[in-house]
Length: 54
Image (tube, rainbow, N blue to C red):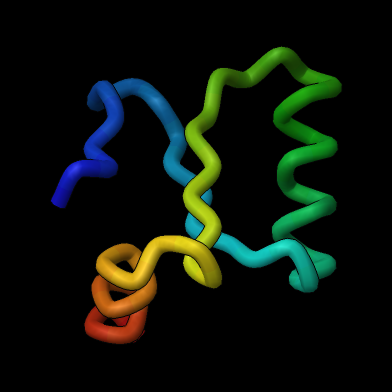
């Protein structure tokens, strides 16, 4: 999958309509925590991967 991030970076798989995802990104930004956001509404491979995990 092409969405791999460095081992020390948080990867947030979310959607624009997810309130928890929005809150998490706000905390990361406020605390200057590096993260990668993957919108699973836009990335079919990532959405399938998330489905497998769940």
